[in-house]
Length: 237
Image 1 (cartoon, rainbow, N blue to C red):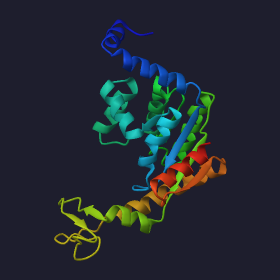
Image 2: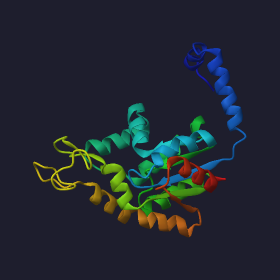
Image 3: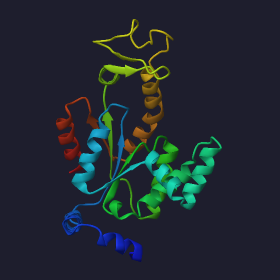
Image 4: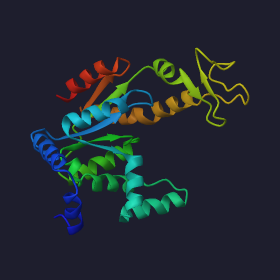
């Protein structure tokens, strides 16, 4: 039930905006529920596709980083625990993250389902997520793996890259470093290859986990964004 403060806030909203939101919710009520996970390395395009899918199916986009920051800022019990862990320099536990996802699912914007981005990263996290969803009487409907060759990713990302320590920027064609992937002054290696290697070693077991559950679809993410969108919509239809 809305509080007096919330009702007062609504009084300040333009009628046309209220009607637009009402019509959006009515339209969304006809959509099927979907609980999705997007998996993909940096530069794979899942960040481009998330808003499209979110709007098409009236889902909420759940980024674990954003959720943790929101929980900490709003001082929820789980947010307080997360803040304590972060202030000690500790990793936020899997149970805490799953609990924050559980809380987020209660929000009206998540009524039709969600897109989970950046979680789970391990099989243990995937199992804890499944346990939480099972308690709610639901499950993951589809996992989209944005598969793309590392060489294509490197071309996409390192066309322009910034040496993280110094901020010096390079472009492989127009302002290349003397040695590809290495900063001219410090010699610091481009971290992309190590990030991709870490991503593959960490997430391949998660991909295998969902493949065994027959909910995984591989998306050919090297295609043009419009083609990828078509492939995503086909996978979700």
